[in-house]
Image (cartoon, rainbow, N blue to C red; front, side, top):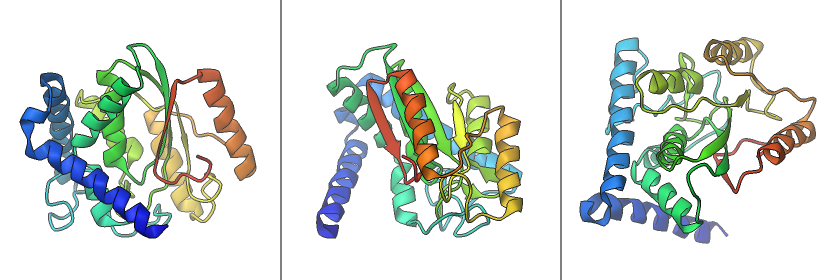
Length: 242
């Protein structure tokens, strides 16, 4: 129930805090990965400051650069600010790497990462860890985001990802986007905000998946995964078809 879920979340958070509090618990490679993610965050925070899209320090005290706004036209559902900040912890990249190792994944192995834009911090950590381990991800991101996610109308996920690539912090482009929200077709968003998300995807050169309804979108995403034949599937956030 809810109590068990809260205990699981607390256990995961405590694992992250332990990793951060004891640098000797990390290998040299893990320290390099941690520093890569943290450098990416600081770069993004500084860039957003220059662009006029920065989140106030009271909401992003660690300058993660991946915290959005409380509400906007591309916001889909309510989210928890503390959860979004916890998801930025670079210790997650190390945890992903350890999961990969435990599962016996090798360089060149295929994985799938299906994510919403609600947890951009966790998404960055997953991508960075996958690239460090030389895995081949199928990456599909839904662009609508919950509260405090990548929901700034001038800094949706495609804009953030493009800047992270430009800065050399990640190399991987998403294979596809979806609009997110209802049926991952943008249901519930205004036409103006659907246009905003489509333009962001077009500017990044990434196609937006289409389907007639939720079941059709599930079928599209399932077929793409079947064709990729991943050894591991990672879901981040609450994209409806995932």
